[in-house]
Image 1 (cartoon, rainbow, N blue to C red):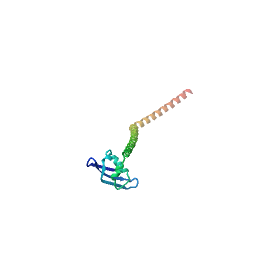
Image 2: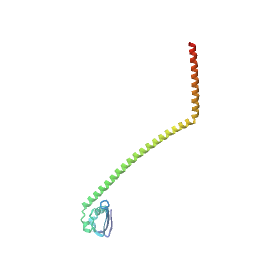
Image 3: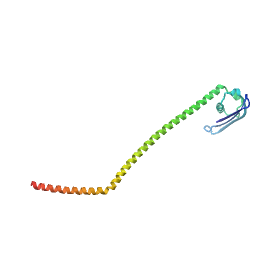
Image 4: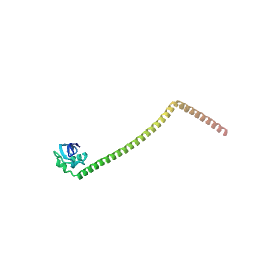
Amino acid sequence: MAFVSSSNNNSTNVTVNIAQAVNTAQVVNTALEVSTAGTQVNTTNIDNLSDAVICVFVASQPSSPQLVNKDLEQIHPDDLEEMDLRWQIVMLTMRARSLETVKLLKSQNEQLLKDFKKSELMVLGYKLGLESVEERLKFFKTNEFVYIEDIKLLKAEIEMKDIAIKELRRKLELALT
């Protein structure tokens, strides 16, 4: 990360305060600080530079105790344009990757929501089925005594009909003989 601030003293000179703190934790877990304060820079060489381009340039330079006027004068406008283009490409790449990630996460979220709604419908169906079974069970339990009595009555009727059938068979055999 680099910080650049400038203030115009007059039309030909600019005071540029550059403070750079580069954290290279991924490489060697060390912090490097480069600070240049009060350096006078000719504005004719940098009047078309943006703060972002200067930051990129300073961040891309090897660590040196100070960035002097002659170093800034050696910056060619084409180099600055190239650095600006690289910066824009990096930013566009990062934006594209983040958009891809957002799209992926959005599609995964939509799929999870679909699965969740499907599960909710299945649970609702199971609950309704369970309610139906519980109602039938309750109905049969409340009418269990009636059913037992009906079964006993039907068994008695069957026994009486069996007796009647046996009696009629016996009479038929007597009549035939």
